[in-house]
Amino acid sequence: MSYLPDSAAFILPLAMFAFVSSVTPGPNNVMLTASGATFGYRRSIPHMLGICLGVVVMVLLIGAGLGKLFEAEPRIYTLLKYVGAAYLIWLAWKIAKAGGVDQGQSGNRPFSFWQAAAFQWVNPKAWIMAVGVVATYTPREGFFMNLLLSALVLGLVNYPSISVWTLFGSTVGRALRTPQALRTFNGVMAALLLLSLAPIFMEHV
Image 1 (cartoon, one colour):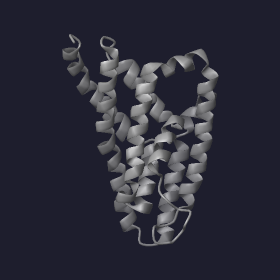
Image 2 (tube, one colour):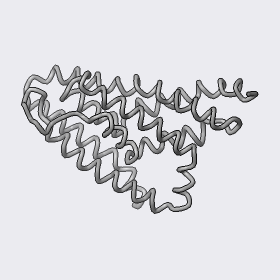
Image 3 (tube, helix red, strand yellow):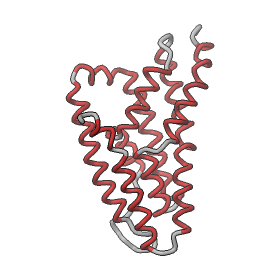
Image 4 (cartoon, one colour):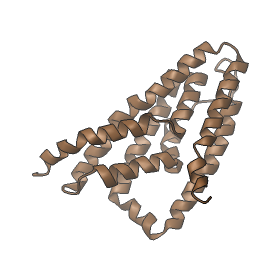
């Protein structure tokens, strides 16, 4: 257990990385802002918890060797990336069409826990975060124990960080008194979600 003192040394840098990665704009936070505005904070809690579980599981599986699979067969990663881009475009369309919680639209509901968790596998920013945690911040000595600790730290930091965006959205949603105003806000969120895809397509320019 001689690696345990070293484990404590990487927690603060890892927590800082997790905070910056979690709180900065990206697909998850744009979607949470729209969800907070449309459905409120409480109904968006499963969405936030699903994000936390998704990124934690990604860290554990990438650390356990999934990254090696993508190195051996990069086409799998490329396919996953473009499936994710297509899914994000569809989500942007859904967000742009979303109305308020009082409009009685039966097909209009927040992301579920499992939908949010599964979404991380096609979220480019989540991949960058998970790979960064494993490759840069998890010490090699006592790797699997430190990997568990890294995943725990990420999960603990991620939830309050992304909550800021949901709270912001719910506050804005209360201020938007008309369905038209909320649709305009969600349209802006949809445009930002599409903008978050720019790095994927710029790779081939």
